Image 1: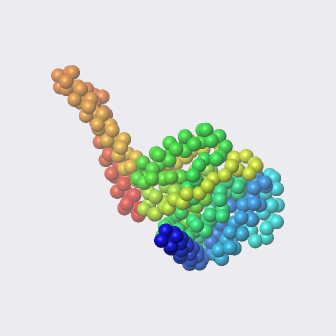
Image 2: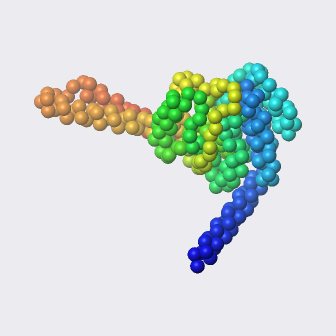
Image 3: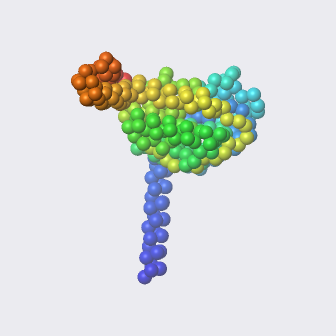
Length: 319
């Protein structure tokens, strides 16, 4: 009895796995041309392995695709490694413009409406691309959410990213497991709406994530592994790029939902002013100080400003 039950469960699981695999294959075939965009800056030791993995993986699932490498001003043999693979398109920036600029160039050059981005430094599991693409039938963006931080200066990057991710989640009104993963797929025509907002540097991923979330688009997070980079050195600057990411979180949320930034500040000021008003009444025999009035009025002004800005955004059709 126990043996038959075990066999039955195993067979059921196998049938379910086969069904899910067939369903994923159907979804992949319905995507049309997929454009893989790979930015690279001095990645001669890793780019070849990444490209071979991408080509072999997408060949195996039978999806129609193209691979575009944007060489962002490399001074090593990155371009030569790419040229060794004639099925890969090479686009070169004469100088280093930043990873965000390279991704935007790849988006503009892409012939397909489905874009999947990754990095060329060996850190992302590119064999997981079909799993992400299969989810795109039900979502507007699918992000490979890294299970762990494996970048340089991990002791500094991990807590900074956690704090920024918490802030972004609070402002966007939804949980964000990974704000700035470079492995993600989306539709080109949707992302082009936000192209003028996307920065040149490392905050590109954070910006496009928040742009999608604050405009009502659905985002799916698929857990993936994350590996130490293969040689080379990261262009990530811990202080500058962390500050830029923090600034862009406020900028994007304020651009689309100003009330989510101004509202809490206005509420805290009015609350603080109200508490100070009670204190003035108790200690100064109901004499209201000028600072109390100023705090309350500032909070009210911010709330009104947020409402007006929100109405302007909705009227302009930005949302």
